[in-house]
Amino acid sequence: SGSGSGSGHAQLRGAQVTSLSLQQRQDKVVALLGQEGRRLGSATLASLAMRLADDPFTKVKTLIQKLIERLLAESTSEATKKGFCDTELGKAEQDRDFRLADSKKLDQETRALEIKLQELDEEIDLLSSSLETIRDDLKTATELRATEKDENIKAIKQAKEGVEAVTEALNILKVFYKQSAKAKVLLQASPVDEDTTGAGFSAAYKGKQQASGGIIGMLETIASDFDRTARTTEASEKKAHEEFVNFDQVSKTDISGKDTKKTLDEEDVKTTKNSITQTMGDLQTAQDLLDAALERFEDLKPTCIDTAMSFEDRVAKREEEMEALKKALCILDTEGVEADCQGQGQEGLQLF
Image 1 (cartoon, rainbow, N blue to C red):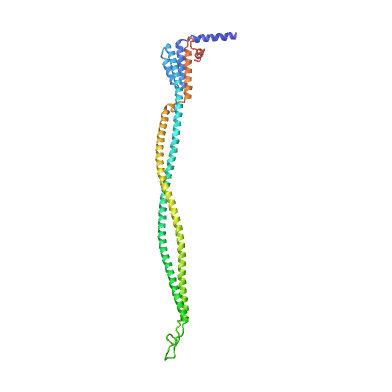
Image 2: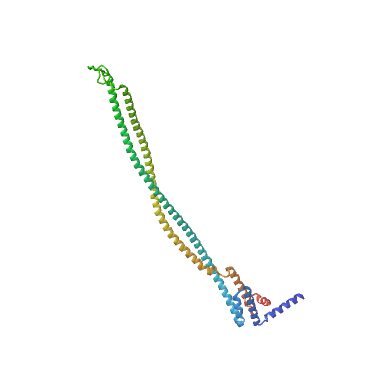
């Protein structure tokens, strides 16, 4: 029957496979490893294939088993290394980023403090210049006010003295003209009858009654001028005094405020300079720590970053290398002792 014929052909092929010589098995292993070495770009498999071609059959299986053990050990070691790299790179990157942020923050603080110091110095210079101007203006105003006051006091005194003198003269004249008007005619004997209307003649001397009005009016005008001068000068002095008092108070208040501000700024300058010194020290420390973090990161790069293949690619390649080696062991398993083969030896042989 068909089924019986197929079974017979399979048994025949199995018998032919089993009957392969040890040398044929070894040649097939060498071919398999050489082909997989080229496909995977595996120097390990290619090197082993070249070595197996010259070694006796009994040694071939041992070499393959040792290489499998070595690859398993490398796998375990690399998993440990990856764990180490992930941990250390994570710490190094975190430390680097933290130190970089800290350095930037301290650098910004230092720049801000330097700008503040410059502004304080400029403000102190402006305050010093302003204080000098205000004090000079106040000194000049004080001197001018003193001179003006002395002149006003002298003018007021002279005007009042003038009023008193003219008033006294007016009183004297008024009394004189009043008494003269009431004078009685003194009879005097005279041989001359003509021109007897003047003083020393038969009529009484009454003074120049008509001219007296003009003199008194003129003196009253002079007295009024003196009085007006005294009053206007007093008013002017009062106004000047009030204006000076106000200017003096404003100036002294301004001086006090600017002096206080200048003192505070000078204290702030000292504090700011100390802060700059402290921050510069902190910045230097932060930069040193950043350099150390960068150096640590660079130290890890050759081991953990600058590799020809990624961890995943290396794992995949190693698994394929081990799969090829296991196939080779199955080909060499003449006694069926390899538990993982499960007929793969015969299948592997049929592939070649």
